[in-house]
Image 1: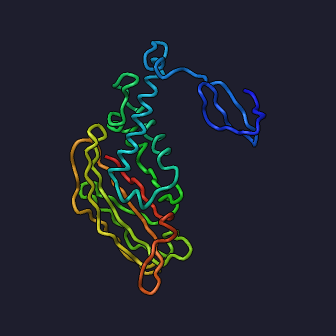
Image 2: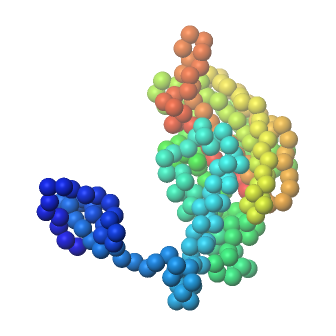
Image 3: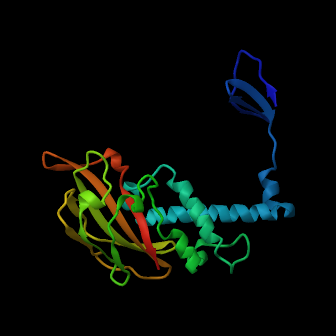
Length: 249
């Protein structure tokens, strides 16, 4: 690499030269690396093509899951969700021991107990993890999709952010086939409670239990609100909301 000593400071690429700035100093270097055409056709890069194919598949699989869950993910996510899902989907893809290298898939990996375990307990918002927010036991009936929290004391068994006056619970069941990308989601009604010491049993019953090819995902969402003049407002753009996959079957 070489330093650029010029009145005109360029950043970007000009023909086969790349100009860039690092630590306040301008540099120039010749474009290098292997051409796209060679990677796509040279037998010596077959491993690279296989890796690229599986990497792209893992990334698109994360997008399929986010799209299937729709507004729930929009209301409870962190800034690194896309990269975290890419990592998780890559691990699940590695559970596919049937397909040849370069064609391993998330759908096959998820058909294994090990693949399901990777997604079980996944938190869409790493800043609000279920086990760090909810300290009450809950039961899940995978036949009906019903999630039940018995006699929960919201002020003691929920770690709520400063300023919160109410907490909401919602369950969901998602049937998703990663191979066909066909999905269906059924939601429970939202149960909204004040943060107090009154024991309350919460029953989250989805409108249906979607079935089909692929897997079923059971999710629990927790949201926080502040009541002002009888109107509830989400806290700080919903950054405290929890969304977790509690089971995969």
